[in-house]
Image (cartoon, rainbow, N blue to C red; front, side, top):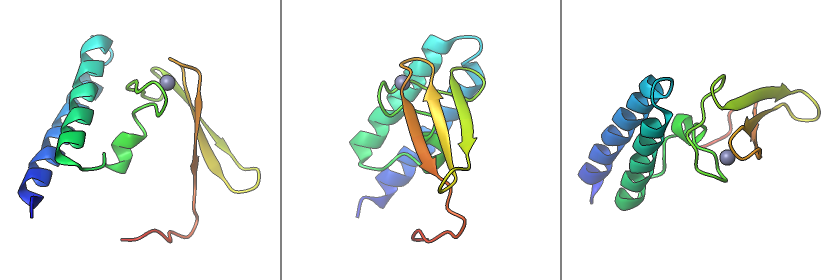
Length: 106
Ligand SMILES: [Zn+2]
């Protein structure tokens, strides 16, 4: 139906995130603005952010977070292996399970 809109939205989201990643060291405020725009584009087109970008946005404070810049990434091996991402902006943690056998839908 509106797959053209979704495709264009995803293209814009990719562009915005890559711009944000390039500029975060020089201008973190502008990088955050790019990400805010990308999230609005996603909402307007009713697409989910692609997984690689979802991990770059704090679930709690919606900051653009990059490892080594403003978040900490730790891999925990206890129980099921998972990655813990700590947002250094708000201090909250996000857990991402590492599934050895990929059972999610294609
Ligand atoms: Zn945060």
